[in-house]
Length: 241
Image (tube, rainbow, N blue to C red; front, side):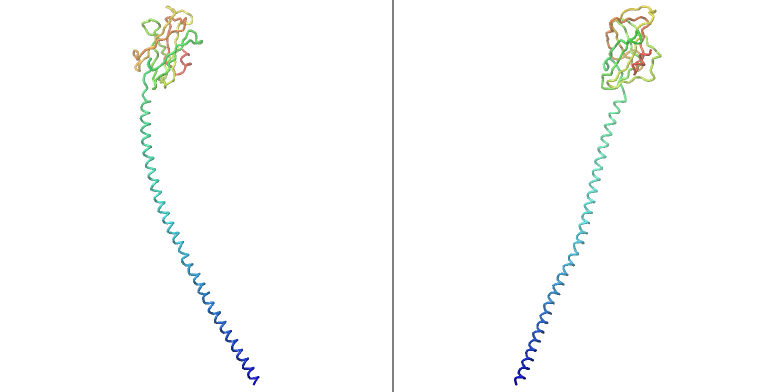
């Protein structure tokens, strides 16, 4: 009887152990199911995560639209620059027209100075400077009268320059005065004190504008050989005659 009970107890114990093992296995299966589901849940959000690239494409499209607007602004700036260029061109045209027509050099718009020179002998130098605001033309030769002489001093014809001398404001022209023959052979020699300088008009007949009165250097001697050159742009050209 004891042996039977012992076996029965062993069998019951084995059955209990088997039941506990089966229960443990079932519990393991239940715990894995939630983990598997949890893994699926973690994977599912990855699909929305792929959505931002689509949103990024939308942002690129918006940037492209902004770029088009920027191009429109650039066009407006170009039109403004063109208008300014036209205005500047008009000013240049007006200025050019004023400089293209010089006035005649006269006593009103020039300063004339007479001075002695060491060479050649028996010569004086006239310097005329434009004191006006516009270019002036020094036509032909200065018309000179010593003291109270009625006739103008003779002009040296071969001193005529190739072109009329035109003076910008502040610039000068020159004319040389031969006072007497070197050997003193000419008649009517005398000492002169004053010199009147008249200016020739463009046509060359008579004089124009106000003359300039000058005091001659002390002891200036002249005779009937006195003569004057045409106006020259270079001092040395005037003094070669």
